[in-house]
Length: 61
Image (cartoon, rainbow, N blue to C red):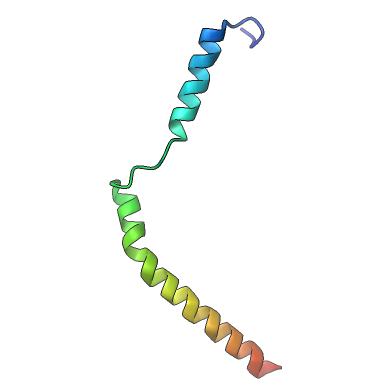
């Protein structure tokens, strides 16, 4: 069936199921818990790498 012939209840149900998948992430999920545990170290490493890159760029000029 096309969208034009579907009843509003059917299309509403489909829209609800699609939006249910895009809901807020569960913070107790192991993957997210791991990311939260690694985030401070990853941020520090990225900041240090940025400083190294800037210093090499300044030296090379």
